[in-house]
Length: 263
Ligand SMILES: Cc1ccc(O)c(S)c1
Ligand SMILES: [Zn+2]
Image (tube, rainbow, N blue to C red; front, top):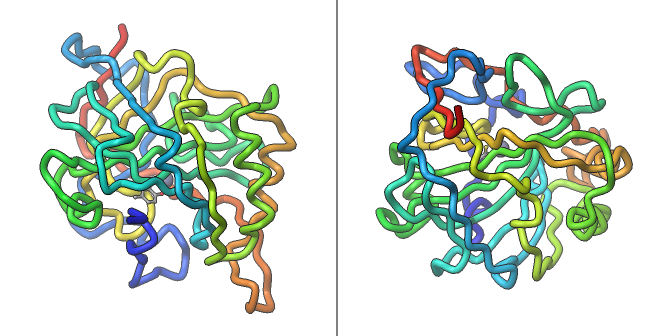
């Protein structure tokens, strides 16, 4: 049921981000959010997340990031509200980060970079029956983006950090249960920006309603350092490469509107 393990990125571009520009792509991600150009939309509802920690299944290193995967065969862990009409099912979450605290996020706010960014990936289970179907459809996915800042240690994240040494190499997997992804959301999830975009890793499909949280979460420098101890490479490869800077370059807005749920 892993929503992403079957989602093998086949035609890989030498650079992990895939093609820098997708031919004909006019709603690519990530983007810079220009706050003064975002449009307040009073019709945007608060996000409603209902996550069941028991649907957590495994954590694995897919050679681009580490993914925490959830059982998405039932509507046990869901997201609704926001700009969406339908119910979306959580299938995985992962992060993007830099080699230093100076950069690492994919989205930026008025060009401000964060050291890392969390993506909680959900697919439209009212319209589709599998992640693999939804990922190819307009707005088949809804991804919550949360910025990470370096500060106090995040107690909820530590359980995940402690599991990382076991998946240092690409394609390593360990069982991972009872993790509540809700603990990684900021206290305020009512304030967010939303726009139509794409996956930031191949196949870069333009199927994502992005929900970027205005409020960041804090993690410690030591916790981020463990992210950087992961490797892009498998155990067999002789050249071990640190898993850092696994973010995509920013993409043209192409006239898209970025709406805000707050004024
Ligand atoms: C489905 C999915 C896989 C990888 C990603 O970085 C994103 S942003 C979404
Ligand atoms: Zn991502």
